[in-house]
Length: 234
Image (cartoon, rainbow, N blue to C red):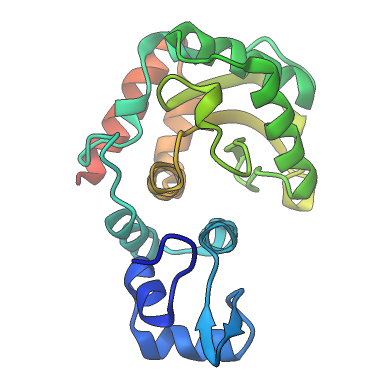
């Protein structure tokens, strides 16, 4: 596969979809690309940004396809979320009342893994991502993360979770408040997309969200997250 650009066939393979389907979307302007020498070419970073946004509306089946096509060697395929979490990177309750304090607190929680090397760099990158478009969903969950991987700021990829005692304004659709936060810090795009896809599937379950929202402490929240991840399998 090309180091700098995807061809049409390579993009179809990367997305796990047929060439005909991708070609139709490209011709309709639905996928970012450009013609170089008469052939369609696609920049990997632009495709990652596009796919990340598209995934917000994906069904469970569509998200499962993303998981399969973005399999990372950094995670356990059966439990990609749980494999990047630790009991100490879960905080219930999370002591925060504003968007900035949520992000600062989550980075501090993630730092308990000893894998956060440049917290200020990560905070700035996450805030820049939020300024483009909030990572909050209408169901009270947000998945803050940098727009692009920052491998120099991390030792290993890390996921942190925090549950606030009350909802805060985080930019969700229809001004819905947010009280549950999954901070995703990955060293590469493949890990990032696989984790986002799995989290997207997990948070589509109202039963899981209700149980997680009622978790009395960090240990129970960690257990619920690991169980939900395991139920989806690899």
